[in-house]
Image (tube, rainbow, N blue to C red; front, side, top):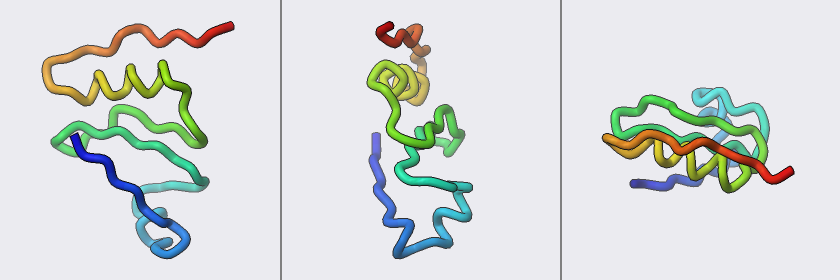
Length: 68
């Protein structure tokens, strides 16, 4: 799995290409580039773990649960 951080202030064309309107924005993609998760703002840990599970081949996401 690869993690990429982009400074959209220094490279605004990349934000535009990826349709990122605010920072931070977290995008999770499969190896083939298919987007499986996007969160404008910081995602909660259960959301992120479920998204990462979707990105791993042969895995399905566990149900995301947020504390009350």
